[in-house]
Image: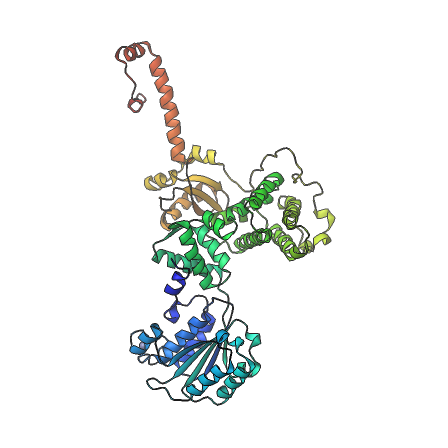
Length: 527
Ligand SMILES: [Zn+2]
């Protein structure tokens, strides 16, 4: 499989397929729909965000013979077909990086003066336009000063500041932004589903982070990962391939930091170090996760149950403080003599302040964290757990946990749930039960309950516990579900019945005489 199969296959063939550039699309739409005539466009932005793709789509729409007043090209006429095949004679693509000589550009500009034979426009796409020589820019400028009506120049550049102002002032400028990882995730989901390639959420998250805002990089990385992962993209394998961080380790680290559990936090950190990832990446990953947690605290809109749980276990002010600490560590990272210590130090600072997470909100005046400027009185000088603790400290019960899994299992069948709902939720293991969220572990092959069923379940919970939580479902092995608990108790009871049964004299004689065994399922309580 070649490296850019997906990027080429899924290159947008119409504006509607362009990802993450709505602000630019809106302007282009207006220009095309109203047939406003512009003769020079310049697209700037980092690599792989869709500059030449957009330029080609504009060329396609301008050349289309059936477009009338719409925005999109028809995709069916001869002009559209030849644009699609890269064979339209009035669409000329030039790579400025390899055509810096002034003669070539001059030749091209001279030929542009002749009217197109078969269509309304002669369209030129000059990629990496900042690479043109000074002489070439001057020649181009002359044409742009008095362009014949049939000429359209589309230019693309990653370094807009290197393009002369005189050129820029004659162009319609569009700056394409880097694409958010949410948008990249959506795109990857769509593409991988269309390609019938299996993937887990961690896998596409890792790819979207590594792509760094570039659609092309996201798809190229996906290509590499498909080749590497043998058909199914899993987060673990992609961590290995891309050298990215296994986010579950960051979750674990922050969970321990939030609980002030120094030793466990240090163990999490050691595991991260063992993966031999870049130390700076660790701080960035911590920052990313803290950002998500703080947003969840404000908006409560995350559909990730782990983030919801962590957000429940941190006070808003403390979360913001941890963010500042990590950001501080990151900003000083390049001057730190020992990168590993820089990460450790940031985590230790968070641990120092984690006691605040239990002792109430930080006073407002101390919100603006600037390192040591925080008054000493707010700092617990003897944090309960630190990296130096030799003995393992008991894990603190998470804040806000209303009931434990065992309590849940014992009382589950007493809840007034109707048959099918009771049966369904009996197969889920309780992971956490807090005021605002209940997290269940379910078998990956089992669908999560519909919103309707969840609503009915929540009604019962509301009545019983006087809370109104949101439900979350994680895939895993629900080995300790109420149903399993019930089965286990049944087994224990049956075994007890069995041994009682075997002990009776007549039965033991009978079993010996016939070398018989007892069918455990046939034993039942006396009615
Ligand atoms: Zn057409």
